[in-house]
Length: 322
Image 1: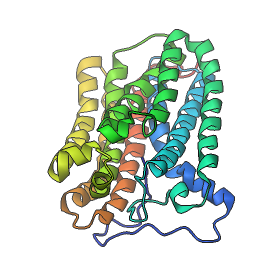
Image 2: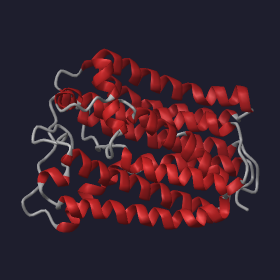
Image 3: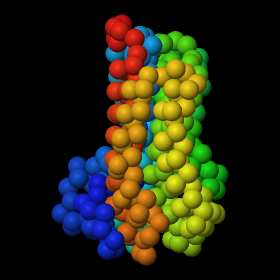
Image 4: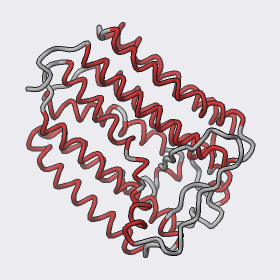
C-alpha cells in the first residue's frame, strides 16, 4: 500500500518521477521502505494509546513498543510487496504508482528479500517484550501479523491477488492494531476498541482502495484480482464513499454506545481533507490523477486519528499516564 504526498488536487495526470540514475543506496532503501505509508501504522497505535489514556491505564513503554512493532511490520510488508510483485510480474514499466526498487533495478531482489527478513526479525524481537507484557493474546496477534506481512503478496495464496487485501488491511490496521495497543497497556479488552478500531480500519482501507482503483487495469492484465478489479470502477467508488461514511459515524456511535465525550466529535473536522480525494475518485479520467488522492486520503487518516485521540483524551480520566 503506497501513499503519496499531494502537491495539488489538480485533474491533470500525475506521473511519478522516475528514479534518478544517481539515486544513492540509502535513497533506494528509503524508496523501498516508503516512509509516506508509515502514518497508516502510527495512527491506530495513537488511537489505542489515547483510549487507554481515557481509561486511566496508559503505559509509556508498552505504547512505544507497540508503535515500533507496528512500524517494523509496515516496513516489512512494503519490502515484501516490492519483492513479490516483481517476481510475480505484477510490477512492470507501465506502473502508474511510485517507483518499486526491485522492478526498477535499484536494489537486487535478493537484498530486498533479505531486508524483509531482517525487518521481520526486528519486529519479532520487539514482540518478545510485548508478549512479556501482554501474554498469549499478543502471541496470536504478533504471529498472525508477521505471517500476513509476507502472504499479503507472497506465498501460494497471496491475499492481495485474491481480493482479500482490503480485509487484511481493515483487520490488522483497525481492530487488531487499536486493540493490541490497548491490551498491552490495560491488560483487558474493551468494547470501545471495536468502534475505534473499525473507524481506523475503514479509513486506512480507503487508502488501499484508491491505490487499487488506480492500478485496476494493469492488475487485471497480470492476473492480480484485487477487490477493485472484482468490483470495477463503479463498485470501487461506492466502496470508497462507504468507508469514509462508516468512519464519520464512529464518534457519534461511540457517544451513543460507550458514553464517549462530545470531544470525540473533533474527529469529524478531519473530513475537510476528504473532499479533494472524493472528487478525484468520482471524476478522474486518467488513473494517474488518483496519485494525489492517495496523499489526501493518508492526510485524512492522520488528522482523523490525531483528532479522535485528542477527543478521547479530553473526555477521559486523569491522570493520563500510570
